[in-house]
Length: 98
Image (tube, rainbow, N blue to C red; front, side, top):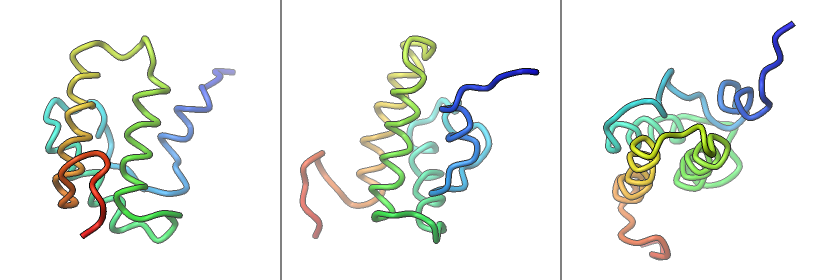
């Protein structure tokens, strides 16, 4: 029997978002952000705002991948955070809602 990590199960079967296949493997931060935004806006199961849900899933993936995430992909995913904020019309990390 093959055992899967619980974090992979969360990523694959999140109760909050239905993610596009391979969303975190893409090499375009904007494409990642827009995919997460779409998923968050279409989800009826999320607990927070669409931005909170999308950012939470992105941060979860980065944290759970840990050392297995190459420096290049980590940089792309960190840039995706900025793109996600921009997609939701937020300027900075602490920017208040408009």
